Length: 571
Ligand SMILES: Cc1cc2nc3c(=O)[nH]c(=O)nc-3n(C[C@H](O)[C@H](O)[C@H](O)COP(=O)(O)OP(=O)(O)OC[C@H]3O[C@@H](n4cnc5c(N)ncnc54)[C@H](O)[C@@H]3O)c2cc1C
Image 1 (cartoon, rainbow, N blue to C red):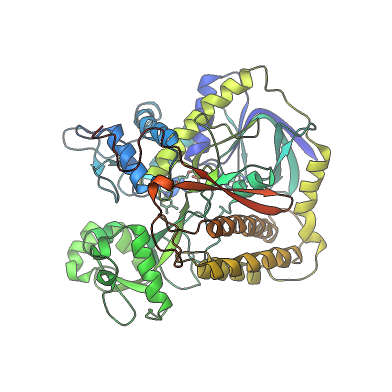
Image 2: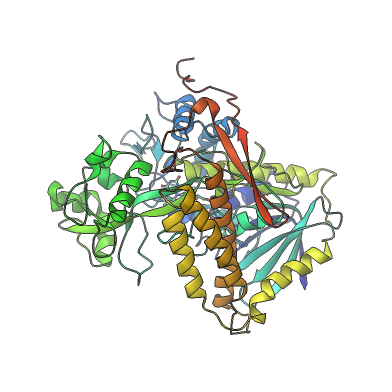
């Protein structure tokens, strides 16, 4: 097995990974830093896909306290308050860095101040943006800086396992596959950042970038780490439904359409939202997603099995002007958003859950750090639109600073990996080449059905138990499914097998956490326990993988800054 060495290994090149690389380089330029990424640096991940923008309290009248309260109340009092406090304060620092240090251009008001727009769930217009292509601006500028600073890159390198040292108590590095030639490479590092960006792509309809398959969360579980809030999967209510033949299905039609007065209409031609919430189409994401799912389950669907969004009553010309990007996206798929109706369906968007971590991005495994969507606790039961990219960039920067200090400290040596663990990880990846036959497409379809029907927007105990059983069987079915082509270079079927391995495993963690939470809170809705949780008694789930099974515990939320019912704004 080929070996590489680096002081700091960063897995993933989204907002979290790139910020970590730049901060680590600034803090300790003498260290070797390597960004290893499944896709191409600057071209992959969800940060690049950010449309809406970046939440930050900048304008007069706004404050970090207000941003904090919106985050905590939006998260149903479940967030870790110390992490949320770092988020809202750090966002002010990061947005200045993005502009003044890394050269991002954000939209401005005529007086030169940064333009900030309204976003759902916020009591102040604080979302900074570059048109509706904010993520491209951020990632392009960060990638240029990474190139300019001579930070090492391993592109199309996929991490498959975190490997401990011989003693078993510190991380020694990560086993990776060079996708281009299929070679196994062990990257030995003094510090490793997990920044692979979660990504709930186990649901039939989903928004994240295609290469994301929860690899980081699966690796963390297998490495013995605890994940919190895994039942909290956010669905965006209006994903485009353009048929099974196109990857455009599942992509987001923005919230602004409903905000501007768009109607949701079921397959019977009726507007239905008023029957679910007095705010109608302007209710929050979780409520609208549940309402659409209920209509679908009642059989009042469109030809492709969703509902319609209708904008034509607002005047086609007006719609074309106001929502140019969305109108064009729909036109590309043959739909007339401005003058007709477009089929939509709720789509899995974001995982609030992830690896438990501290304010300095350390995890329970010495040598391993985490940032971005792989981490849990910042958003609680719901993420506010605009807080996702703030999360990845703020904590990515923190992780870079911490890792640089950690590596400089005496405690961080290059450690020898446990050879048995390394071999077991390699054998796990080789497994499909030793199996004959089977069809990965069948496994994937079954996974989609299971998660969508029984562990998605509306959940019940019998449904979750069914999902648990199905997922256990699916895991076995995958293990019995082979990859026919043994040439490992760019073997996409092999990588699909590995993707499914991560997705099925993390789906089991989601299901275990959802079963353990017999209440409804934010994104997690149990039809058999529809009452909202009492915030005072709020406790988060922790799921771990030990002795070949999942264990879930509940831990009380520490209200370290403000308790339910109180506010930092009035204190
Ligand atoms: C369509 C869409 C629109 C969004 N709009 C907004 C918005 O307007 N505002 C907002 O705040 N948030 C938004 N989000 C959420 C936001 O994109 C994420 O919260 C955030 O960008 C995640 O950053 P990250 O660095 O953790 O992960 P990502 O940016 O997703 O990066 C993950 C990286 O890890 C790599 N990777 C994955 N697996 C492996 C592996 N096994 N080995 C090595 N590398 C790996 C990937 O290739 C990628 O480079 C949106 C998300 C989507 C999908």
